Image (tube, rainbow, N blue to C red; front, top):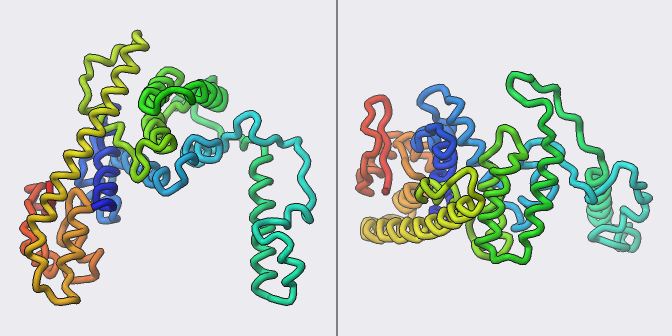
Length: 335
């Protein structure tokens, strides 16, 4: 259930992120867009939801502390952010001989007769030099921005550094409280003009870094959608923190409920898998139905390398529930 639960939570949280900002990204459209099977031209909201989805996947695939590091923030914002103290353009580069002492150490010289060892040592040295060069490069000048879209006086680097310094102060606090403060500080400082959603993902990343959610990324957006909105008062910092704490608690509770419901749905269909041939696609179809909020016959056919008709038969054998009710395309799933 683990991977299926994680994938479903990614999709649901991405749609909830758009909902919090007053936009609508239909869940079924996001699933089809992610599979490159759009039923229509993607909207701006759908593209934003896909960006949140990609960010969630990237954060979870990386080591726990990556998202809150300078390199992680630079990658997630799509720019070049170099926090103070994490490298300087004026710092001298170390000589190539020292840089060559990477993970293979002195084995490069000792095993020079081995072509493979020599190639690996050279590759290791090149990677190390590249990493050090990236650490010391100055922040890349951003492309000229349209003043109708961006506030040109908005110093994103300075605001982001201010936010990081404020988050660093929460190191001694309990993880849940630190995550709530992380989300609240992002709302107050607003480091990035057009990425209010990133702060909520970073709050979830902090919980993972602190060991509270080791195997997944908490759905803070879904929790915020379920939390009482009356508690979020713009001028009351305590109310903001209480709101995000409530959102974290709601996300945890909803995650447990979803896990139990999907586990029960899988168990109820396990009988259909008994006595099947070894080359049957039914077990894979069930796993795919659990890993996606919706599936279509075409999606099953594409993922399992079968015909569309075979995909329809698999849906019928699993007894999936039709969710869309649309004539142009039909989709099924396990709620």
